[in-house]
Image (cartoon, rainbow, N blue to C red; front, side):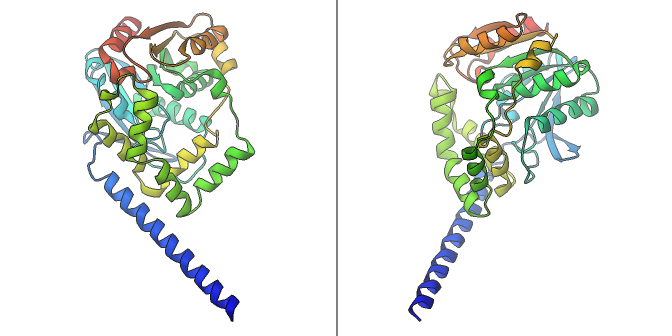
Amino acid sequence: MNKQHKLFHICMYSSLTLLTMASANKLLFLTSTIKETHNPKSKTYEWRFGKIHYTKSGKGTPLLLIHDLIPGSSDYEWQEIIKPLSKTHTVYTLDLLGFGHSEKPAITYTNYLYVQLVTDFIKNIIGRRCDIITSGSSASIAIMACRLDESLFNRMMFISPDSLTNTAKIPTKRTKSLKFALELPIIGTFFYNMLINRIQLKINLKKNYFSNPSYVTPKLIDAYTEASQFYGSNSRYVYSSLKGNYINFSVSHALSEINNSIYLINGADTANYKQTAKEYQQQNASIETNIIYHAKHFPQLENPSGLLKHCHIFFG
């Protein structure tokens, strides 16, 4: 009888704990998306794996902008340069599957999945060869997409690309276990919300991505928070794939075989940017590199005028 009594209490406390976690998850998702920061003029691309949020503006040669792959990433990252670029280009932005306001199915996200998305988007929405600007880790997606079908791409600019060493990291027992834990019902969502929330996003952006913390404005934090929580508990699946190293892919060989014009841009305050640039040029000697002062990982947000000067020169 004593054992049954203990078992009853264990079950009761476990149920109450799960109920509390579920309630906390629901409350956080509700409060994080209440401000609705997404562009009301955005469009939807009905892709085979989910609905893709995208925007189109301006006239001229097509230019596709692809955001970074960090928690809270979305096309909001390009807000400061879309309008100036639209004067000479038809500018497209999209939220990759699992990010921003695009659909977030409960799947494992991989580099090849995004390669298929980008190539399908260019074929079905843009409809012709385009220039491309990527941010952070999404450079590997553009490299592999170009290697798959060079006819879709003209010039490519990579802003703050991840090092080739990091892109080559593969899933291990540890990262697979972490991915499994994050995908657990209720508990995994609770862990995700403890790691990815308004406070943690603010700390991360100020510490790792901006040279001047004053650029991490409340509006920017609202956008990252909303993007990280849109579609509720399904938001954790792309994060679990990132932490599990499933989106990584070694692109060194593909980079060496690309004949397109490539321009590497880094914020001058980015750690190890010289080593990253050297890795890329060792694989492809024709790659041009440059830096933007008074900026770190996101020069498009921190020094947009400096970035635009390079864009006008490189893209004409």
